Length: 469
Image (cartoon, rainbow, N blue to C red):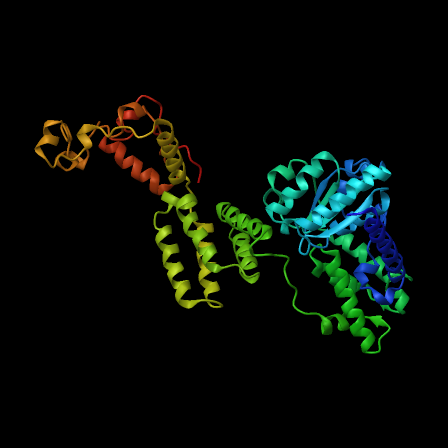
């Protein structure tokens, strides 16, 4: 890019900035959320954890030493707003890029301009990328060397977990700042400012809003300031169209639609809810289990995903405490596939309640993990000769099957003292019975027959119940 082209583009940006500033000062041209966007750190609500007095990010902004970073938080928590405030507070150039529209070529052009600004004017460049999780690997890789060299200061904004949304190499060079959903009190302060501001707010339109309307909107905002302001603006427009100069609950009831949930069924919120659902089942809390189940179904999650998770749970967390659990959940799975939604929600709820109320044992999981660890450690050990079949004379001559004791020929149908593991495995304790009724009865029966603990574990202290339900 020639200096002339760069200068032309700079002048164009300057002209655009002038027109944009004029537009920003005209409330009739902007949505309420844009008009009320905080312009200083003191106007930002609800992010004291990263912007409070003495916090690292606030100090970095005050010293104009902003590091490359990722702003991670839910919609309406202030990620883009914070990036704009940083842009206004810093002496660096500010270059916004859209992760939806920009390609590698756009990234390279911005980097070239940043190099020129640093070389010619000793001026730093901040590149802001909204929705950075939408950048593919090639686009993120194009940023990496320039972030590392300090050619640009990168600020990315994302609603998704950076551990999955940003390449590990790039993420290692970025500070991650987590923005939280706004508290109800913070949302109310935003709404109150929108009502009282006589230049950017509703008072400029000659409207008043009843306090109970603000309370109701805050309840429906789910920590999203933009959602709250958009709702307020919609209801205010509805009231104005009805000839009202005061917005009441009747206007809100007439204008509002059913609330939607902040949930993308293929992204971070999906996994957070799934995790909460499983942990509620494991914690034997039927109310919480049903709550998260319904949250996920209402948000559009695949019910078959939930049923698969409950089938796994029936073995992993209920297991031998209730051996029939897997059969019951499998039956409910079949019933749901025949019934479908909406009636099938009853089937899903029955499955969740059953598992939440069932006794718990993770002995199946621990036995599996113990055996897998041993197989990984010791490799493909030889099967003891006595356990091998001997269908041919040669195999019989080689000792296959020699010394095998047939349990049905012995009292109680068990071969007391027999060992079945390879000798080099030692005395492992893969299976440790849980202290639930079914497992304790089964183990007691084996004790009475003289086969518990197994021969390879006798004298090692193994055999007692250790798992917790």
